[in-house]
Image (tube, rainbow, N blue to C red; front, side, top):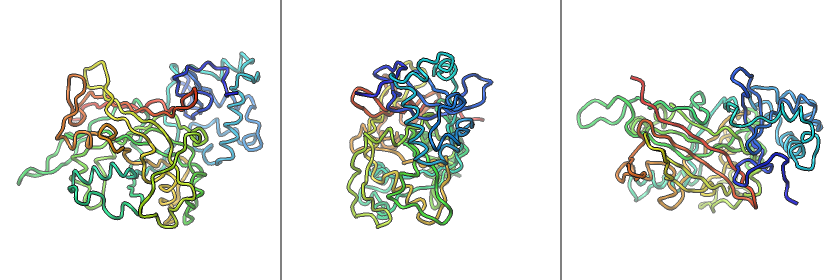
Length: 421
């Protein structure tokens, strides 16, 4: 019999009992932040569950103060045995056949809060943020646009998961406005470089892995153990100022073209919840070096969509439809490569996948590809866009389709507001 919650969950909900993603929220404006899990239209307050002594397994029984923290980092540090124990406890408590929470009206009233009434916060304290470049289709399209079709992907790309170190301080929660960045871009003729608001502001459809226990400095993580260090995934929009980036990135890579804002969704969907939707990763040619060779190389079947709601319009338009399973380098390979030099990852670190694009034009994960760097404007129900304009809203959604239920991520949203003078 399928697992069913005593909390009513709509069939199209992203948050059935099979999911139980983790976040951090405030139930009232003057409340302290506390961890929760999403269930249907509610958030289950884990601080109340912990205070009631219901995390009574061998690991969490002595560590339930992890759910009295303003972020999830202490919980992430405990590792997969603790995560599995918490998941089993919560699925049992929320089950339709379990009376402990269902029949305790006082605890139920304290612990179950309507999602519409809470403020969702960044679920983790992000010490470091790394952004990879792991989609072959995206790499090919970008290379073709900027270098031509002869050799669009550099040879090293097929041997190492390329990445750069991003700015953790400007990672923001879904719903935060993004101020159009100012900066330099290519000069015209003999003029000095342009300086002012970015004229080529773009979204990037990504996902990101949230690091769990991490590793000690000098001790790499084996690629076949890397999943033990990944708590779960979030949706991510790594906003990009293409004109600023194009002028600055040679020879050291992205800087001001990226560091003005990165948006993540509030709910972290665990790898346990995603496991039923695992699928084979693409075949890698040439075969990766031994330290990146996985015994089981897998992605996840996660349908992803991007919608743009142009400034002044009521309706949004779907502009991208793709799937997480198009990633060439897996999240476990990304993590293993990140640590192969001895770099130490810490609980709450964020590892972005890079833009996720598929093989078809409608599956391209950013406007740079969709408009071919502005050459082919995109039609949006009566208006057109080459790049994002002030007032435009970008909404990313993602979910896995189960048998009678969805495992979803909610939304990752942001609106562009004018540059500061």
